[in-house]
Length: 215
Image (cartoon, rainbow, N blue to C red; front, side):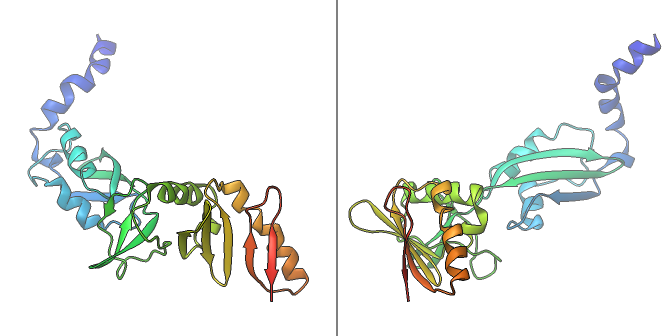
């Protein structure tokens, strides 16, 4: 009988405990945000302060996930009166110029409500909502973040060419650029530094080669 009672706790205990004011939500803790303000997450929840931590919070998590800067949201309880909101943000990958200033874009070209003047974030600038470029930048951000952070601008050139501005360096490459191929510039930069040579351009358009133009 004791075993049956213990195993059935998840079914009968929450409805019973949710009637006690002791378990009403008094605190909300937001974790996982880097660009999104925790207050924005709490506002998106539209939380009733008389809500018990024992009730189902699926609807609250769904409201948070509706925010364009949120990829996923999960809510768990911490006794006696705290809800912990775990947020996974949609990563911005580039800024695009608009008549209203720079707007942040994600890998699909969707606009993110990110103020470049207030957010502590450095992103490449692209001329337009070019989803192929944006997905390339998303791949670089995930796989070679140190190099991604150096890119200030990406633009298309002639003949299937891409130009990556990585001050004080310019990198010329093809549109099928991979993170591994971009990483090929690292040993070249180290070798040039040993020689005390200053490169202004690295060319990755040729298979298995990195051509450097130095000053």
